[in-house]
Amino acid sequence: MDEFARQLYKSMIIMDHTFESAFERLEQILEKMNTGKTPLEESLKLFEEADQLIRLCSERLTSAEQKVEMLIKNRNNELAVDENQKPKTQPFSRSLQNSISS
Image (cartoon, rainbow, N blue to C red; front, side):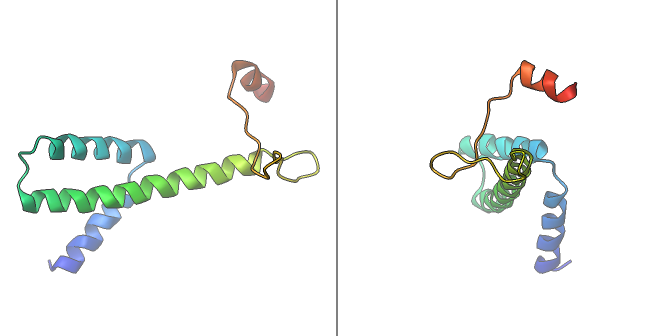
């Protein structure tokens, strides 16, 4: 398998991660790299993997944020915004959860 095919395969495996598993893998990589005992070649490979995982986590968070913004619409089907024209947010609470599930 040539280098391009190996990188493509690795990218496909990374895309299969959930946000949580990608974040957990990032923590493992950081732990390993912070020991100072990782050889240079392995460190470079881990850095590349971490970079892809960071992008994946960022994309998943952005997607989740967009979904939440779509759900926080007012009755006129417009996004509820604050005085700075940023989407309004609310802290999640049990009372909110109970009113949603009712």
